[in-house]
Length: 139
Image 1 (cartoon, rainbow, N blue to C red):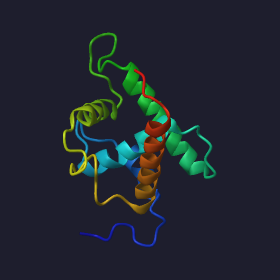
Image 2 (image 1 turned 30 degrees about the vertical axis):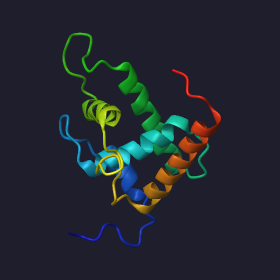
Image 3 (image 1 turned 135 degrees about the horizontal axis):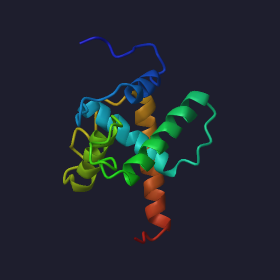
Image 4 (image 1 turned 90 degrees about the vertical axis):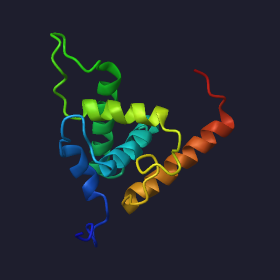
């Protein structure tokens, strides 16, 4: 295949993923794994980003999460939600909850994440471990 954006800082494709609309109810494993990292990040991020672009991406992921949480998948008149990321993201989150092999799953544990996202994922894991160590999870 083509070289995957060699020489760039690796962040450009994050935005491309979010602006590219997935097919109905479908997203590639690669899109899914990137989105997972971003969702995990946005869940706990207070939104203080040095880079304006990172802050925009973070904001749109937070918006996406709110939408997914509040949307039942149908509009008031019973037609399917027209927000393109709604259905695939719901499916992704359902997968997350059910996945019984997250360490080897190519969505939950992708091996080909771009460096920027790999770094973010490590930060996410560190934050999760610290949270588990200090706070008893309620709920």
